[in-house]
Image 1: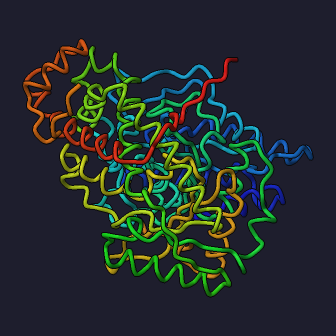
Image 2: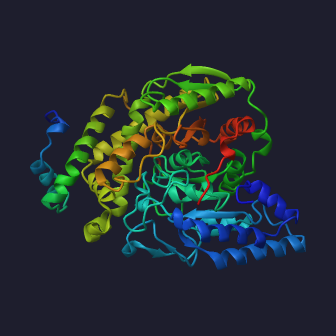
Image 3: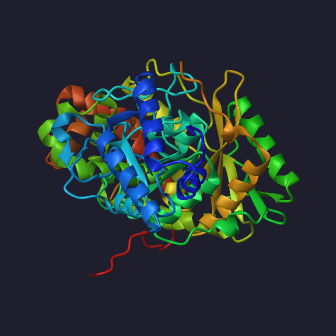
Length: 452
Length: 65
């Protein structure tokens, strides 16, 4: 049960082979026993989860449609508002707020029958990739608890990887769904910019913020995404297979400076897709290496703008790495911010031009597997890791394209490796189709860590 | 208008002037902490200036509602 997919759990509840309350109790007990090892949850909503599960069971018994996520336990990154609950954003308690109403994505999850089990830990204000948090404590990688789970949605990723819930919500501004998904050995989807509403969510950078699901499978990612975006689930499209599909491998930049084991696993994954009938082509995105520069400038300015008053009045309440990142944004000129937005238009056009000749682009998700937690709380180390781990992810925040990360192997030290699949705007169906097809013939996504 | 200086040569004193121009107060320690990142961001902007942007407008739209 603990490592079953969301689809399977919803099916079993709807089919009455198990009740939503039994499912909720199973997962809540697992969280209570084992999350002390990972610190993935900031707030476990035991009573509310059991109440919600009871309502799902009542609906099933009454013959009312319980929704596509009937009884599925879902965790939520703690920068998304849930009515009556504090939203901490992983920050100093001075900055905590009490949510008066659910964010739209929460309403959609509830309407779909999901059972929200709690709020997960994150890098402070989502502005980092280590999830080493001076206020809430670090989240630990379930595969090696001396290592970072990645961030900033590290709590959500760790929770899914550890079997605390089959699905979780994250946010992604520079890679914060895909990086922890990759480092924790699970699946994560950053949808097309603007398809999932971000109101009721603490922003990091309005131009780059995305919300999306972290799940055990690409199929589940499609299911949860369809609920979040309030669109029909592309189930048939996802199951079509990939014979004849064109996979673009963007040489230069995206496949350079890789950890050798990451490179080997990702190249093997491309070979697996080719064996399924996909056509693999080398492509070139001429200025891909400049996308990170534009993304960094935009994020720096917008994050500083959002936090300007907090910085002036309570700067000492920020962790050092986040404070440096926020402070730097205050020094970027308006002209340079506009320059970055112009570069964004230019680079987006370039990426989409390449996607006219291919159906998806495939790259490694990160250049290296999970780093040690020790030292990652130091500002210099945190800043360096942000640069390193967002290298292949933030170009897709800049261009707003839909991207899926799926597990594609493990290092000799047992650390997960992720593969990134990017597509055309609003073509989540093709991206999910490739991920699903890969998961039909591999078992990386079925592995799970043992917590003792 | 003169050419910009190399970002790598930006000094803490120059940064302090920039801060004051923006109405911000930074302690010497805070200036020291942020200086490498400000240099880095200026270098990133320099890279973007090399792109063939021509007359391309920024990727920002406004729809009155």
